[in-house]
Length: 263
Ligand code: HH2
Image 1 (cartoon, helix red, strand yellow):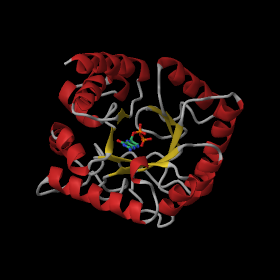
Image 2 (cartoon, rainbow, N blue to C red; image 1 turned 30 degrees about the vertical axis):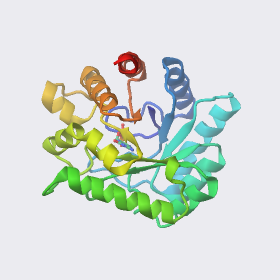
Image 3 (cartoon, protein in one colour; image 1 turned 90 degrees about the vertical axis):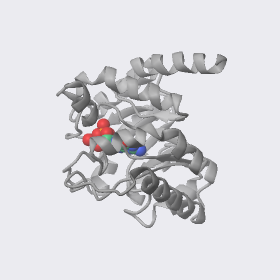
Image 4 (cartoon, rainbow, N blue to C red; image 1 turned 180 degrees about the vertical axis):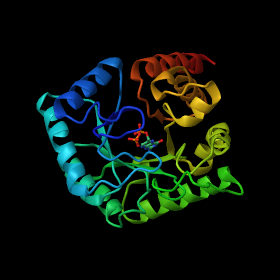
């Protein structure tokens, strides 16, 4: 899943795709590099970020989604938003799914909109909100708590009419978690996936715990660490990984898939 941030302030690539023409160019490049899904967002959720009103998110997304449709872009698109109004506009413009980092808690209308379009839905775990989540993350058992949260959110989505088979779960690496919490979750991905029986997405690309491990301060320098996490996630059974660096990630995933097929 290639990441396309149509934002001025994303943590690793903010400002690079705010203009629709730049965003469309980046989408075409990621498709060429082998992205099988494109996750387009118009609101940064980096630690300390401010909320972006739904109308502004739609204004940023509309020309990009329309422009890609006009060019006959065939890679399925998910939209990274917690607002039902944005989801409704995006799905109406042809997006195939919604990536909701609040897992439907931010907007009571979200599950209904996803159900209406029979769309795919990513439900992610987050402790707190992007504004405050990294202040003091605390868990007594991070793996068990994240698993139970996701189980409850899957059932809530299904009860609201979302098809179970359209749901992916995501442990939410970096969302209200210390580096230790992230590593504990990554170490138990297979367990979480099988406990829930849902497809799983993992999003660790360029995140700060990789910088802490490798000493790479600039997010753009964290490619090898990010590819290592993607490879590990695939080996634990992850069904999708969110990646800024699509080409290197694709090569790693294809290689691992070839080995796993014969193992
Ligand atoms: N991470 C980010 C944003 N959305 N969605 C899911 N499901 N999982 C993630 O791990 C995830 C996500 C943060 O990365 P990025 O989009 O590059 O940054 P920003 O939020 O600053 O735009």
